[in-house]
Amino acid sequence: MSGLCVAIGIWLVLLVKNWPFTQRAVVQALEDRFSRPVEVQSFRRTYFPPGCVAEGVSFLHRTRRNLAPLISVATLTVRGSYRGLLPLNKSVDKVEVAGLHIRIPPKAADDGQRDVFPLTSSVSGNSLAIAEITTDGAVLEFMSQDPGKEPFVLKIYKLKLDHVGEGGPLAFHAILRTSEPPGEIRSDGQAGPWNEDDPGSTPVSGSYTYSDVKLGVFEGIAGTLSAKGKMAGVIREINAEGEVDIPDIRSSRSSQSIHLTAKYDAVVNGTNGDTELHSVQTNFLSSTLFSKGTVAAVAGEHGKTARLEIGTQRARIEDLMRLFAGTGHPPVRGAVQLRAGVVLHPGPQGFLGRLVLTGDFGISGQHFTNPKVQDAVNRLDESAKGESKAQQAADSETVLSNLKGHVDLRNGLATLTNISFTEPGTVAEIAGTFNLRDTSLDLRGVLHTNGKLSDTSSGFKALVLKGIGPFLKKHTTTIVPFTITGTSSQPAFALDLAAKRRL
Image (tube, rainbow, N blue to C red):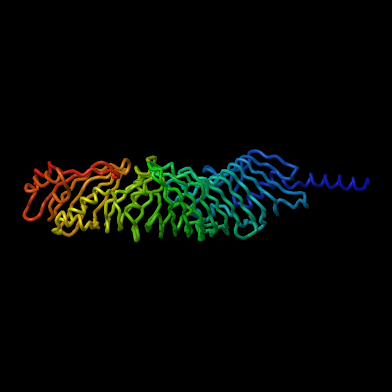
């Protein structure tokens, strides 16, 4: 028994004398691992479990010591085990990092010296194997080659790295939280081996999910978004594809929501956050939109600007009005073709305040959902065909109108120009505005028809229209100036007498 006690005592003396977790040993191991000078402000040992705690750790530039450290750590905690207590330059079980801030240069320094840190190999070849590295609240700054351009900042809520220093790729598990819109990104995959001369060429692959994204922070819309996908490539050019699901997207003015899904194929530059959208297919209700473009930084603007080209292959005007204007009962129905350029600027303004859209559209098979409005159009069309009121009553055909024009949307106000509405014997030209914020209409137009205005109504109104009809005649065509005001759900049609006097 006494022999055992003596042996244990000798082992403890040797252990204390050769304790591997000393400040000198830690600094030496870090300098070998990251190939640069390392400074530590304070240091203490821990024995249960065996390890140490270093505070104020800075990884310096090799020659330019006056510059901010490439890596700074508030607290570095190393945890080992008593399973043999292997020397520190061999392996440790776990490293916990708090207050991690990394500045990643775009490439190696001009003098040929590597100014980035190796993560998967060491300079001396004595690779320190770390079973697990965890960190909370890490900040990564990807420095730009342009000295006047701000770095791209990536904030990581939680990060776990496995198998560090074993010569192959790192396994990572990351959680990122976004503020606008609020949401959480979880990503798992592999990165490396680290390219010491050009970090942007480091391979990366994995999968990701984006969940519980609240869209209500954007003016005019509401709903909860989720997304999932996979990625592969190098940090500078990550190929990503995935799916988006919004089961309850709606206008903030409407209580009725719709289900929207999308599939996308994109390339992401992980060094600056710029994204090139190769294709996006968006489906909602009975409509499909196709788009492509970029989400990238623009000189003079803080944040990313989205620029998209949008087109339709199978879409309905009533679906678009429900999606963008929040119209529960759209006033118009029909198949729509749209080609538009969309720009979404960054900034504190709401969604509609940052959105710019310019494009051309055409609607076929269009008809009004308001029976009174559609009935008047039907009667005018039938009159243009030469039918009497008796014939119109016997043959109540629904007019399928054709409508086309140009739209320019800025700050929530859609300016409509070159709008034309054509049917055999009837042509209408319209221009004006439609406010997406309150759905108000302010349109002016001129109707050219071969029909009789009195055929569009009955009773006293028919007598009035029949009385003013001769003053609106030009050859065999009746020219009727009109206005459309009110809202999209309750439009008000009226003769424009001021315009009539100018005819």
